[in-house]
Image 1 (cartoon, one colour):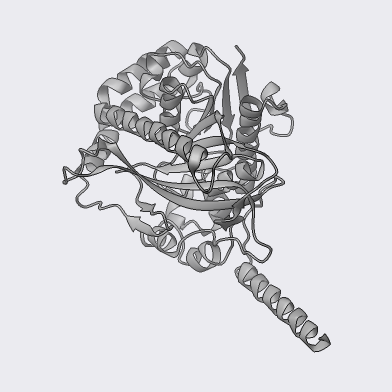
Image 2 (cartoon, rainbow, N blue to C red):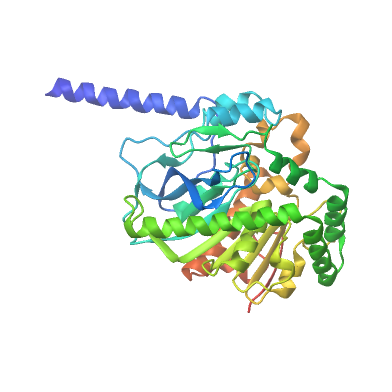
Amino acid sequence: MKVSLILFILFLALFRFNCAAVDSRSGFSLPKPSGSYAVGTRYFYFIDENRPDIHTSSPDDYREISVQVWYPAEPKPNQLPMNYDKKEAAEHIVNIGFVKPSFVDEVALGSRSHSYHNAAVAKEKNSYPVILFSASAAINGNSLLFEELASHGYVVFRLGHPHWCEYYLDADGKIFFRDKEHDEYNKKMWLEENSNIVHKTKDQLTRAKTAQEKLALQRKLNKIMPVEINDIRLWVGDIGFIIDELEKKNRSGKFFKGKLDLQKIGVMGYSKGGAAAGQACLSDKRCQAGINLSGFMFGDVGEKQMSVPFMVIEGVEPWCRNCLPINDALYHTSKSSIYMVQVNGATHASFTDVPAWKEYVSEKFKNILGSIDGRRVLKIQNDYVLQFFNKHLKGLQAPLLDGPAKQYPEVIFKSCHL
């Protein structure tokens, strides 16, 4: 009996040593979530058979949405968290020259996330508020934010919309890449996005001196971006469809049955996904609060007033430091509480996971990152996002939203409470 016990203890020690070796072999670690919950994650893949995808070559195709969820969890005692990223995804951004080759082994595979695959949902609460995140560009670009929110008791569903992201994940978490060569719809969108008139209008919108000028330019943007307007409405349809599916899973699903508080839904997105979040909160009454992370607003925002609490978080353009926030027209037309958060030294890419591993970004792309410390900007983003949803979905105190914060002097903050 004693010999068996000694062997078991030696096994555990060796197991823990090996795990530590795997986790620390690169000397790199990711920031830990600050909440009290462990974090679980799993994958879904939905097909909306009520909406044909008219932008593919097959008449039998429908809108397909890749979804990953992060949630408060109870992992098994010996369960290890997942790697930070998939090998194929990491190799892809190496091949396009965005990161150094060492990123694959030292960050993606050499540093574990804080998420446990398929861990059980935490039993502490009967149900948890839900946040839907509209992804843009890299589908996995904000996983550290999702871990932070899940650790504080939110269930976060990240949506990958068709024809936009470089790659998607199926229901087993396996990566498959979009057929870029034959995706004519995507090419059409980017042709419009990169046109001179769109770039010029966005530049004018950024420089505009008044909210009225910005509103007029947002309306102009709508007129010169008909393909993107069509697509943003499709994204909002995706968000609505996923909420429909979550209602089904909450009623009778095996995994999330009864655990989703669908009376408390937030919608958030990055870049184009931020515009989709705004459009969703304008058009879907199930949205109770929304956040745009560094995205130009377009769609109905130029014609309708926001009636739910909304926050915009963005950097300060270094070439236009005295400019009003890009989406300042929204601030003046909103019928509900509105918050504008600008971070000095931050860029568009600052509101993704990239600042957490900025030392692995290749020299060619170093200029996409601002002057602010990477971990610092992530903390600022996470704190403002968390307190916003705490206030407007949970009814908790949110001192950061009361005015300029002494602990964050780099933040330019203004709000209007209605």
